[in-house]
Length: 240
Image (tube, rainbow, N blue to C red; front, side, top):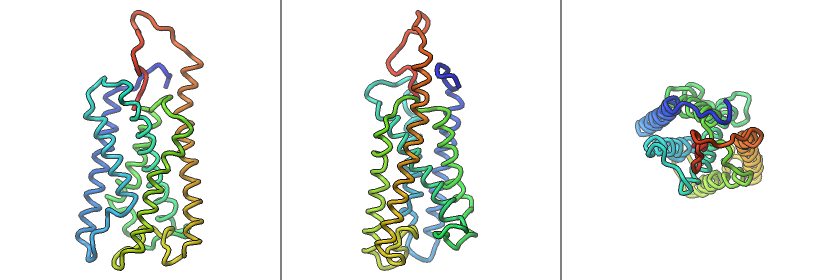
C-alpha cells in the first residue's frame, strides 16, 4: 500500500470490531468453562486472558474514540498498540508452538481441549487479526527501537506474578505454564527458559518496530509537497 494512501476506515473498523468481539467472546467462553470446573476458577492467571483483555480494551478504545481526533496528547497510542500486538502474538506463538505442539518439551497433554471454540478465538483468531491490523493499518513511522525493550515490562511483571503466586498457593494450578513450573524443573531450568523466551520476545518486538520504521523510510524516500488541496495537519498520516 503506498505510504500516502490511507486505508479504508470502514475496513479498519470492521477488522477492529471483529477483534473486540472475538477477544471478548473467547474470554467469556474460557471464564464460563473455568467456573464450571471442579476446582477454583483460575482462567484469570493465564497470560492468554490478560493479553486478550488488553487487546479488547485497546481496540474498543480506538472504536469509540472521536473520529479525526488526534494530536500530541495521543502520541502514546501507537506505542501501546505495539505492546498490545506483541503480547497477543506472544500468546498465539507460545500456545501453538510450545503448549499445543506434540514436538515441544512443554506440550500439555490435553489435546482435546487445545482447539475448542474459545481457545481458537484467544490463540488463533485474535493474534492473526491483530497482526493483520498491524500490517495494514499501522502505526506507520511512530516507533523507536527502544520500544521493543520497553514492551518487555509487562511480560516480566507477569513472570514475577506467576512465580510469587506459585510459592503462595497450595491448591489448584500453582504455575500457569510448564516452562515456569519451579516445582517440576527447579529455579535453574526456569531461569534458562525465561531468558530464552525473553530474548525471543524482544526479537519479535524488534521485528514489529522494523516493520513500522519501514513505512517511515518510504515516506522519507517519497516526500509529497503540500498543496492547497492537501494542506498538512498535525499527525495527518498517523494510524493507530
